[in-house]
Image (cartoon, rainbow over all chains, first blue to last red; front, side, top):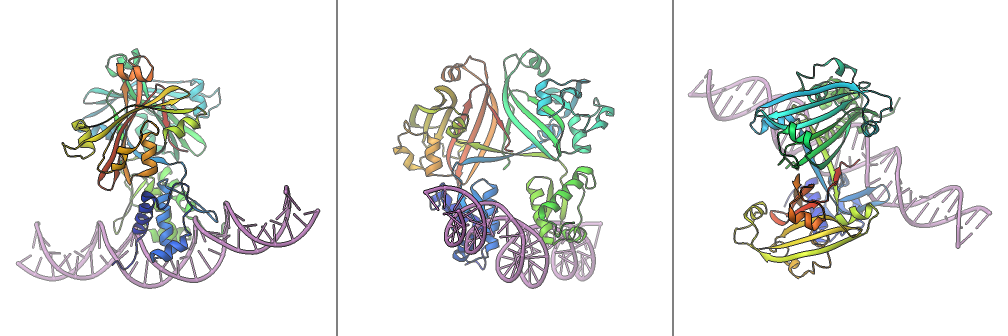
Length: 231
Length: 231
DNA sequence: ATTATTAATATGTCGCTACATAATATTGTC
DNA sequence: GACAATATTATGTAGCGACATATTAATAAT
């Protein structure tokens, strides 16, 4: 028998009880101190285990309120989304980047709203293509807030993708991300060299530095693109 | 001036240094003990802060090896994917479920492989439609491993969706999840009541209980479906 | 019976000690 | 110089005490 219970041992035992119905949805769990006594470990060990389960979305924790099994279960999935260049190179393909257009102008109202820009504020509009072994891979449509990154105005975006420059020079503190599907119209079809009407996987991402938006980008991947949870 | 630094204070200071380039990609950070001395707190406080940054994918931690800023930055995004019923009801719509078909049979080789089933093993094949305000919302195609959940064979899947039954009666210990886009063929178009050729958002999920697969499901959402990170 | 106030409580956190362990550096041997 | 063995080290962890705090329960006042 083990000398001491590790926090992972404790977590696994709690999880087993969640799985076998000992603790059912909505149930209140025993106090940390009681679980510690039962399992023969310290309260801090139980707390570390519970932190992990809470981070995984299985339980809710409240001071004085105690621990409760979540009522409405969700699947909490984590994705690691790499730089497109890293993704392409990880496939064993050669990465290339092509700037399609770059101009300073008023973003559409929906973009301005998402980036929390004043309606009169200009942003840098950059459209580009990422290629894998000379074939189009991801088409990107991006708006960059020059208030947050004024230096971007003097970057040669023909030589380096905006994303790579931003990651290197102006990392974000938080981001919003969404996925959806898009039917390829004539423009997407032309740029990605695919038939009109194909189903395309879309990633919309807005990054922030504190309360200020940095960039809003829509990335449209070629047909067949697939993103999976990290394992 | 604050009496004591909290672990969140410490984390925010480290993150600020990650953002402003004090600690650049690939850099090795000072030892936890040195950071603790500098910031006037305990080593365990620094460790708690670092745990958070590591969980967020910003740094790599190794015993003796020290702490390093990740070389290849990724966007680590977490999604909470609710039960379809909860999602529909959260939209203020009325949820309904319709069983389309149910039979026990040999799954296709790709499904058997993904579920790590022997090639001769049968699985329960269930196809169903989830509706929002009587309109099709999500079409699902599911295989269930009767070895892992023999009880499923006696469940009336016309009355309750397989997913809801499984979540209630046989929760999983881990899962694999992937997203992609699909062009609507005649079957999807017919069942979802949309034109052929629409772009559809697809969620593929396999759940596991230990080493045994529970279910593999493909969920195809109506055009316009969008999933976003939790905020 | 209702509302306000106060008390109690279960989790959250900080710091500390001691020990564990994975990884790296140094030393010894051939 | 290469390899093995050993030492060192920076992070990881268990436990403990003390205190903080958000929440719930009990009590007091009306």
